[in-house]
Length: 284
Ligand code: SF4
Image 1 (cartoon, rainbow, N blue to C red):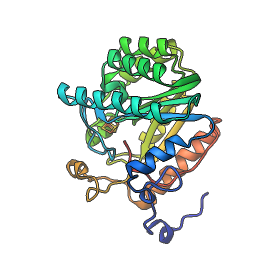
Image 2: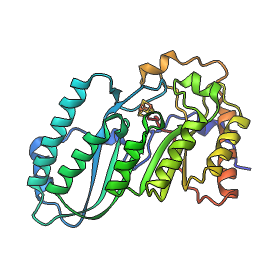
Image 3: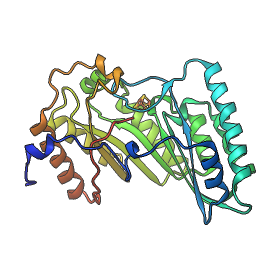
Image 4: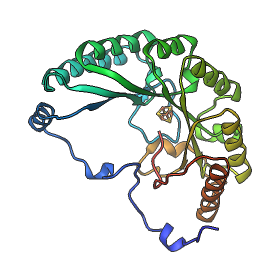
């Protein structure tokens, strides 16, 4: 058994998945940014952000917006193309890019054609040296055309926003996606050559029981996810106003959340997943 210390758990701590935490970062001035790019040494990783989603989930703490308005997407993609050109022009000649990550939001909120154009531009502007490519995906907007783009580009790592398989929890958090949809997405990605597949899951959701969590972990294992990111849901409507629509009846209390975290840990360790810890995070 993990020792349970409610006094420690009740102390607010930074929410982070990395160190230093996001709260430690400030806006970087244009001149500092330019100098940092000009003085890069060694190989670099590129992260490309697509801050849009087809549908916005109630719980989401990400900086993302609905992809509905084509004009807004186009304006963003144009700006991104300009940013790629500007950054590539400032890096020292010959700088090798060995990692390429696409996150959001949901990168598959844009069309596969727009995505392919983006990757084409990255290929032209940077020295991509057999980069490890990864992408975050929303099963609700996955399509065979997207799988083809992933295969053509050679993306080997993908992360799926699954969160929970329990329909009653999905409704409560505004993220309804059937098991068939998740299975079909998994199949498409495997066939497209994805060799490392992550499932994001959550515990501490409104109405979620330990059995619900166990069931989601079981289905995740059966679908042979290579990696699982199990997050504790942080209900902070004063920070994330969209969470205000979530009905908090039946929200697991602190002791229950702790039990769920332990259950998840035990399940993953028992089934051969090496475990790494982070603090609670705002999920997106
Ligand atoms: S949780 Fe993921 S899919 Fe849902 S709105 Fe946030 S970024 Fe988009």
